Amino acid sequence: MRALNIAVIAVPLFLLSGLPSGQGQTSETISATEASAHVGEHVTVCGRVAAKYTASTSPGTPTFVSLDRSGQDQVFTILIWRDDRSRVGHVPESGKVCATGTITAYRGTPEIVLRDSHSWFVPR
Image (cartoon, rainbow, N blue to C red):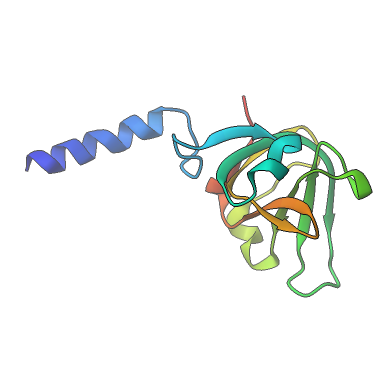
C-alpha cells in the first residue's frame, strides 16, 4: 500500500511542475540553430515559427513547420504527418514553439516528428 501512496503523490507533483508530459524533466533545451549538432539526441528544440506548409498532394500529407529560418536557409523542421495531426493539435502559424523528441535529419536538415500534443508546447 505504501508504494501506491508514493505513485499517487508523484503524478500530481509532475503535473504541477508546469512541464508538458512529453517534455520530460531530463530533456535538454536547445535553440533551432543548435539542432544540427544534436542529431540522434532526445531534446527540446525551441524557436520562432518562420514558415508552416502542408504538402497536400504528397503521400502522408505532411505539415512542415520551419523554426527560425525557412526555405534554403532553414535550420530546423517540425514534421507532422496527416495521421498524427488530430493528436498533435493546432501548431501556431507564428510565435515561439518548442518540440520535444529525438532529432533526425532529412536531406541535411534536423527535424523532430510530432506524434501527439505532449510533444510540443508554446513556452511561457
